[in-house]
Length: 188
Length: 188
DNA sequence: CCATAAGCGGAGATAGCGCCCCGTTTCTTG
DNA sequence: CAAGAAACGGGGCGCTATCTCCGCTTATGG
Image (cartoon, each protein chain N blue to C red):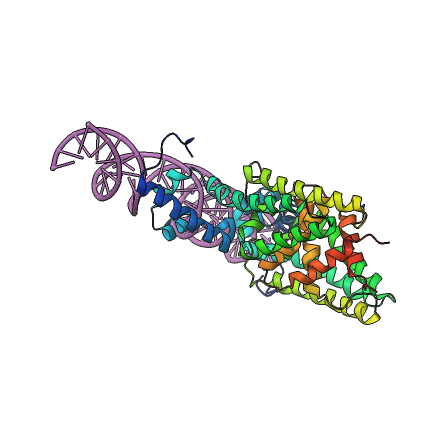
């Protein structure tokens, strides 16, 4: 991304879009592990072209994942205005899981599998965690959620559900989330 | 392992033990990702020696992980005789988490990160899941645990906690397990 | 102590993947 | 339409990690 020095040439723009789209599909299906050449092949371009647009693999990964994470952050921010804090929290949680169910990339992004943790992705993931944290605290203040849990623990549990979706052992995410929901309720 | 054709020579036995011990530490510290050469270096032997004893990396990984998994299976079997089914179940869960906290290998083994799924490890992991399943069913029959959850969902949640222990975001496993525990209770 | 063979160990073959280069093609502009 | 620049594409380098081969060492049994 050369700081928008000049509008890209027509075919360049087209190729870039094809790369992004192919990468979206490839990352969604296989996660961070897909070879760059495979993405280039699917996009119908050469590896060199891919490299020109995205100097490193992580740059490409970031471009794809950040936008998806930001959508989730957006949704979480919107949920803040919902009257019932607990409902808002669970709505966001379900949205995250639903998104990850179709898009494997998020699993790698949230668990940090094979990615250098210094990247921008980590920061965006942290932002999501912060939003969840805000929702959680509000629900705790409201009194409907137990106080002795933090966003880190909650994200860990969600991460387990997300990860298991890819595993060989089929699970029912709704049931796993039901356990989390009931476990979060104030014990009385 | 040539089917115990003849007892190994003294130094061979010694080297093998050193390799196993080094591998135990290395896998526990780093997980499946450690280079074989690193293990060989720690053991004070050459890569060739390592390969003679364990023809492939997964063979070595199996040798280490299986024994640890079998210990957990053993513990789970023993828990069957405990009078309170729910207590037995949570005892086993805590044992698994505690074990994984110190031994990263188990994370990879249970989540199947980077390992060919056909291996013997997967079978042993499944065995552990079956034991958990038995304990879970007994507790459900006893009436103290909700019926609409399977071992797969439970293992997913546990997996999330285990995995988060390694992540950059520090979590309190006890609190996460508390959520699981309360979430599993029969809703009334 | 000597002969034998089991075992050692490390250099390197092999493979996969990220990253780079440069001759060629294709778009733009006067 | 022609000249220049921008972008293409794929062959290739280098790194890393697993696995193999072979000349040397060392334990063992008479």
